[in-house]
Length: 389
Figure 1 (cartoon, rainbow, N blue to C red):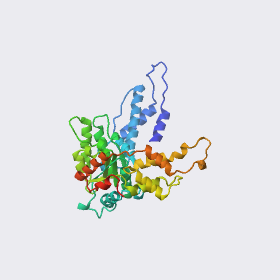
Figure 2 (figure 1 turned 135 degrees about the vertical axis):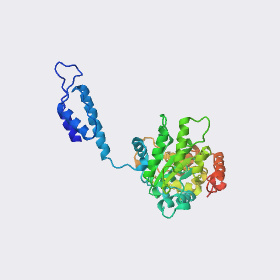
Figure 3 (figure 1 turned 60 degrees about the horizontal axis):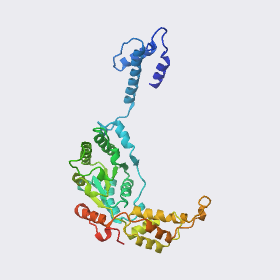
């Protein structure tokens, strides 16, 4: 087809006729005859118009139409699950795929031993061996990870995709909402259609409370329709019973979730603050590639001082402590890497005065209360706030 177009373009006389107006542009009769025969070959009606600019535009449109028809005929058969789904939305959703395998393993997550073992049992094993986990043993369609911010909920979602060899989708509420009426619902349908085609798949939605918050009278109509479509798709409408697709939602405000969404997130797992051992492990990992003079006893003492810190708080603490040696340098432009002293215990003591815990005691009590009412596993209040050993 491209060769024909080039031939037609080369034979088209686009010169203005002498004595004619500006719009009287002649077109080669060769082009007209060829396009007419091509149109008759595909069953289209040839348009008989004067060989002027109008006729030239008509045949230009015909060529464009023929190219589109040829592209449609050469395309591979579309998956039936993409029926009535806009191809542009499919492409947009596929751009949201982080990686077929994010490459994060359970060993990359410090602490959270109970949470990791629970996720492996209820999610990863059934996705790896669907032949064994059938019927009542089938995996849940939804998993809710709730708890304080910065505790590793996103890492768990990525690890699930890696360990189960699944396609990982990282979706935010902003990419599902649109100013056009009906666009958000179609985007949700496209999301679940792509996830079903590329199964096994994991759809991870961070801050899911912003997308599936409680429905009320003051809510906009567009937002309500998107939530309704999301809840319908979570129930498996348009899919098959044995499809391996998991929706993982993470939130630090579980009390704001809609009741229908809470029901569909069958497994609800509390991700607590790191305990003393997890804080020691986290600090050790963060300092692994840094020059420091800390002993194991120093790391133990630091972990004891930062009770109630989240994983993100511990990372911020180590980052602040690493700047201690840099502040002592007088001429930063001429110093060498070997001239920077190692990180010391005093740097951490100074950093603790500046980096405070971001999670309060009242927040922990709220999570414990919600978990006791809706959580899938009981939590010991003595260790839920990161005070355990």
